[in-house]
Image (cartoon, rainbow, N blue to C red; front, side, top):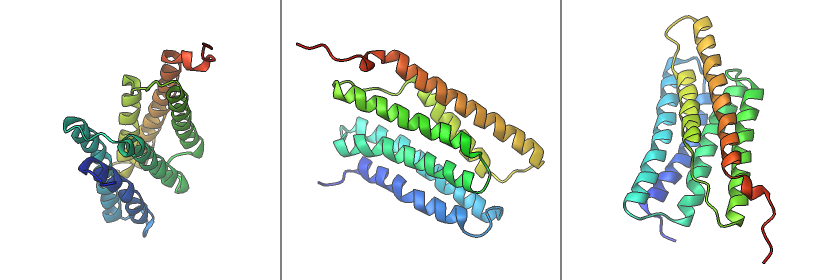
Length: 187
C-alpha cells in the first residue's frame, strides 16, 4: 500500500503525540520554554486534522486507511494530552474519564451503525465538542499571564463546557440514530 499525502499527514499527527508527551514531561512543565514548545506541538498536531481531511476530499484521495486512522489519531491526540494533564493535576481524573468514555461510546455507536451499513457523520454538536476540547487544551498549555486563581476558574469553566458538550454530543448521536439499537428486520 502506498501512502498518499493525507495519510502521511495523519501519521504525522500520531508521531507528534509522543513528541508532545516527551516535551510535556521533560523537565518541570512550569518551564515557560517547555510550555510553549508543548503548545506548538499540540497546535501543529491539531491543525493536521483539518489538512488531511480537506486534502483527501478535495483530491479524491479518501482511503480505508484514512477513514480508520484519521478519527483514531484525533482521539489518541486529545486523550493522550488529557491523561497527561491528569497525571500532573491540571485536570481531574473524573473529567477525563467522562470525556474518554464519550469517545468510546460514540465509537461503539459507529461500529453498530457500520454493521447496518450506516455511516454516522460528525454532528454540529460533536464539532463544537472538539472545538471545546482543543480550546481547553490550548488554554491549559498557555503560560498563565495572570493570577493562578483566575486561571483555575477559567479552566473549570472550560472543563465543564467540554463535558456538557460531550454529553450533549453523545445524546445527539443516540437520538438521531436510535434505530441502530433495534434488532434488524428478518427477511
